[in-house]
Image 1 (spheres, rainbow, N blue to C red):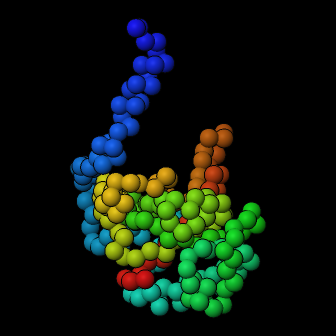
Image 2: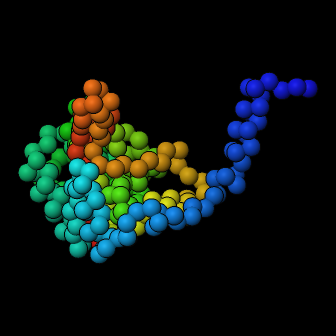
Image 3: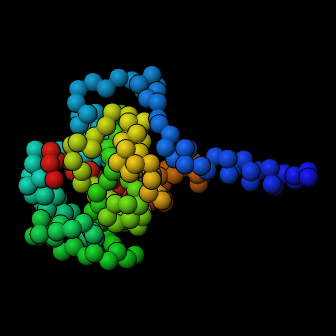
Length: 207
């Protein structure tokens, strides 16, 4: 029987949807594409994130991180801060946190999967606390992370994600590279067009 173009396309899609495709490994070719990383991954990430409009803060301990985050939120004076991270309210005594995000939120605090030093990117997934919502809806996105989550290149982050979830990846995996922006409208740069206008990353040795 002669197959029409629709059936041929569907057969090709099915051929690529087997489990072996999910368990693919990522060859690290990033080192030949990007310039070498000089200094620590922490300093590289901080510099690259600043270049794309974000800001990173580093701390030696989780206690110092939460003290710094508490002071940061008080200084900014956000009226509605949201987070679904366990026990975070106990870490931020001077800030009221809401665990049910709605359209009026000023900022949200989430975790992440990994941080990519060379590009200043944050790898997030739907498996994290906050799921898909808190990475997109708030005008200000605050990420807290461990220094052990820093990896040199994008391929390192993807490989680490495969190993973490044993090939059964979350339904959403995405890289955040700085605040949301677009220049599609009359070539004018607009911040916060399809996500947060500000991105802050707080990093500590251990959390």
